[in-house]
Image (cartoon, rainbow, N blue to C red):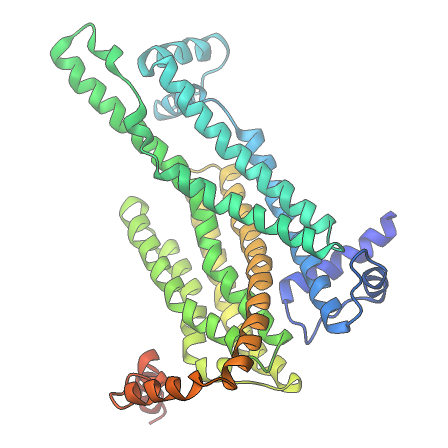
Length: 417
């Protein structure tokens, strides 16, 4: 691919990935030709549109994750070096050369070489996870014509970056460290010092693990919801994609509230509150517009229906992201490089989640449709309808009541009056 073709391709991929609307963006003629001649030929135009969308989103995700991993690798330092720099920053000065080595040697003696080896190993493993996820995502984008291989690579990349840090974080690393060497000289006072050092190191480990997991968790629910609305434009007759967006919306709001409750006590800021409020507006809007999102649509109307909801929510999300970005860059504890790294990881994780959830949801929708067709012609249908009627007698199957949509309707009526 020459430079001119790359310049033409990049805006196309970016526009397709960020819009994620199959009513507005379709596969290009050259992509349709490649897909028709692929090892696993794709002939149908709708399937070609979906594969071309996967290609765009995977490339955007892979590049963002690769840039984040690159920054993390450049900024990677041993725990002793980080502690020495933090100690000097607390004293309002910088150290380098011989003095830095002396401070590192003193910290190594205080913390313990074996403890530092464990901590450095943990940091290197988390860095490896980031690099592995970026490599798998870029490989999935490169193999976009081999759909099964691309799906497997994207799925493994998503599982690696989400599951492994969570499993590692569940291990009590602070309890695995040994500070008994601090008790050898002064018996009474040293016991208190060793416990204090162990507590401080455990808090530092928790902060490192939190900074690794937070971008993935922040991207999880928005990725699921954005993927669901994207599939709604691909399959406008289906109700399940709209339901996924509506059902996961309250979970995202709850997670954001939990996130802001923790950070407000550690580092409260009006920028943080405003950013979280902007990000929470979209999920609340999805619930308010549930009746429009979950009903079947025609291909001609789905673009306008989904577009109105997403444009309003997207405007609030842009404001929320801008405020949170301002908040991150304003923190003294987080440097600019780390802030950019966190933002890149969150954005890359969001796009990767969109592809993986889209692949899984699409397969489950087809399976559910086949299973539903078999169920409609079976003897179990009558029994199932009787059970639903029994539950309906107590008002347990009222969708509007379960979602609280009646209360929202009353509030709208009050506002109009």
